Every structure is written in C-alpha cells, then in structure tokens.
Length: 257
Image (cartoon, rainbow, N blue to C red; front, side, top):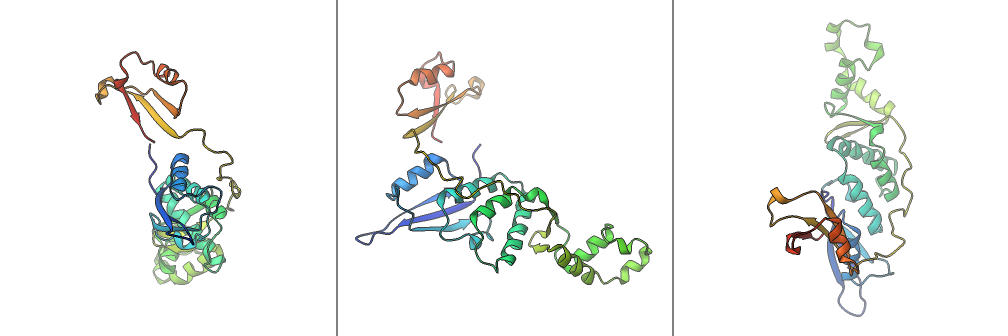
C-alpha cells in the first residue's frame, strides 16, 4: 500500500560555472526514488546545496525543520508521520509546539522530531479544550480537580473555569493547538539515533520491479503472489517460478514501485 505523501521537496545543486540543476520529490519515497532524484541533479558524494520544503500536509511543521536537514532523515520523518493515525498526528503537533516553546521557536533537531513520532502514546489530547476556560470546565466536569469533589454540583456555575484551566495548563506544561489541548504524560523516547536513516551501502539494482500474477486485469484470475525483480538480473526464470507461472508471460503484470 502506498504511503500518503507528507512533504514536497525541491532540491537545487548550485553550479558557479553554469546553470543550477534542480528537481522535486514527494516524501516519503522509496530508496530507489531517492537515488534516482539525486542522480538527476548529479549529486553523488557532495552535499545537497539547497533543500526546501515547498509543501507539507502538516502546515505547522516546515518552520521547525532546519534548512540543513539531511534528505534521508527528512524522508524517514515523512515515513514515520505517514504511518500515524489522525489522533497521533494531533498529539505530535502538540509535542512540536511544546518543543518549539522550549527552544524559543528555533528549528528542532530532526532526530528529536523523529523520536516524537515514537512517543505519541505518551500524550493525551482533549479535543473539547481550546482555551483556559474550556480546559478548566473539561477538568472540573470530569473529576480531574480533586479539590472540587466535595462541592455540590450547583456551585459549579460560579467557578472561575479560566483560572482553573490556566493553573492546570501551567502545572502540566500543556499547549493548545488548533485541534485541542495536548499534554505529555511521559518522556520522549530515544529510539532513533542521528543518521540511522542514512544508507551505508549503494543499491544493488538499477530498476526494481514488482511482478504480480494476473490475467489481463481480470481480478477473477488474480492472486496474491508477488515477487520483486532487481534489474539487471541474471535469473529472471527464478522470479517467474516463484509466482508458479505456467502461462505465457503476458499474463504477468509488471508494476514500477
């Protein structure tokens, strides 16, 4: 299943002796797609001179990503984000807002952003709370303020909910986002280490094909047998045998990744 795209990125290789070369790529991308786009702008071992996020599904995020971010790590962040449920993305936004406040709204290290995606389970979000008053009302009405338990319900209409919410938010270091109130109930895990996403070996293929057995797009004859073929290849028949192919090859559907 294809992952939804999180970032659209423009890359430019500066050429002081002629025209600059540039290209675009949507992230997350496959390893082959990354290798292909780097080849398009003639980048091998040289650093990317310019990488700019021109569009993002998460509009709040690009401003907190350094312009010197590594392409592979940015792709890893995009891959992680594409796997999260909506409530997890909402919690992630709150974590970014909390991290931004601590860093005086400077860019956040890509390693920390990636580790935030592994830490959303340690967050809570109250969609009903969007300011101090609504937060105070939410906490008071749901029994999260022990001091109010002994009060009769008719007294609640005279409570200063804004003051209660402000005090709770400051004590918890929570934040309001466009989606609600987010608070952490645990530390950010350290599952990802810097540069873990950078490949240490080159791809061992020029083209990667996904081969699926089918019959002229008639799903009645399709099955779930799939094989991957690296080109150039020396043993194509082994790939076909893995599909238990006994009919002509034009009954094989070949899909580019």
